[in-house]
Image (cartoon, rainbow, N blue to C red):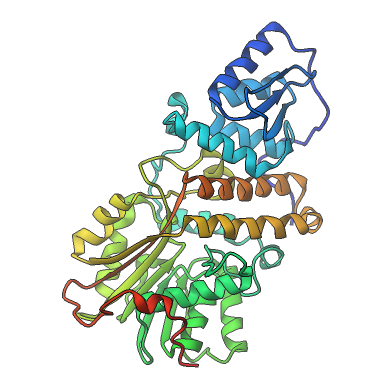
Amino acid sequence: MGSFAGFEPLDRGARGRPAQAFDRWLLALLHKCLGDAPVRLVLWDGTDHLPPAHPVATLHVRDRKTLVGVLLDPDLNFGEAYAAGRIEVQGDLVALNQAVFRALQHRGYTAVPWARHLSLPLGRNTLRRSRHDIHHHYDLGNAFYRLWLDRQMVYTCAYFPDAAATLEAAQEAKMDYVCRKLDLRAGERVVEAGCGWGSLAVHMARHYGVSVRAFNISREQVRYARGRAEDLGVADRVDFIEDDYRNIDERCDAFVSVGMLEHVGPRNYRALGAVIDRCLAPRRGRGLLHFIGRNRLRPLNAWIRKRIFPGAYPPTLRQVMEGIFEPWSFSVLDVENLRLHYARTLRHWLERFEGAEGEVARMFDERFVRAWRLYLAGSEAAFATGWLQLFQVTFARADRDDGPWTRAGLYEGPRRQA
């Protein structure tokens, strides 16, 4: 499928002359920036800087340009250098990221002051821009994602009823969990915004007896989802529509969005709230938003925004409340944080990705492999350390009075129709 556009040719050889006094000063400065992270730093000639504690990994910097770049803008340039092979990591990449995240959190880090503007969500996610961004990530090819996702191609946080659950079982459990939170009943109408490869929509129709209209702007995903609905005999109850959430105008009993809010952008939250308001039926109307978020305002990593998820932004609960729920008087019924479930999900994905590394390299190139390895490893570390959160928020019309009396039904197992 071609190379990972935008990178210079990979050069693994050590570059430059022996480290000078200036380089050693830069190395000490980098060590200071990492705080108490137990990471050993090594320059291209073997010059190193050891942390006080036993290091969890060793980070090799191959040239002065890379060292300066990481110091000037670590959020962007660490990922660029790692993907290009100008930084190598000896040891556990997830443990390295966890150590750095914990050290930076301890220091109250948000971003390097002179680099913060690079990763703030300044632009509006217009229809055209959103299509471009979604195509960049989700239309890499179904064959690629099939290598490391579960059998149903669910690319969102799984739910592990117990730690030993397989990824397949945990994704099935997540879909049942969402359906129970929505209190779905046979014959109801559901609108799903951002449906991925269609697994949840098909699951709701097959097992809960509802009809679903699911919207997505990824052509690859919509095509796959339609075929799967046909194969499983629910095409008459599930309609996959290639269109943007802003164009949804369907009356429904339940509105659900799993993993789309991160791509909406804060400037569009009121627009999404307006869509939900015009869709939800009076009185019994309810919904669920499942999204990656933050405990406090902080931009998404600049390299992730540039190379992996352009246009993405993880909001705080306050931003979602103020932008989506409060203007339309929706009642928030339940808020749950599943970040540790996402860390475990990413561990499964990373293991499968590394098992398919050779095939991924043949599809793309080695640089692509390194970039996605860093993305998956860094994401696992971010959720494990609380750098990122995974929120599920259940809400309803303000005057709904026939919902579940307690939360017990969420944990009683599937209430499937078939």
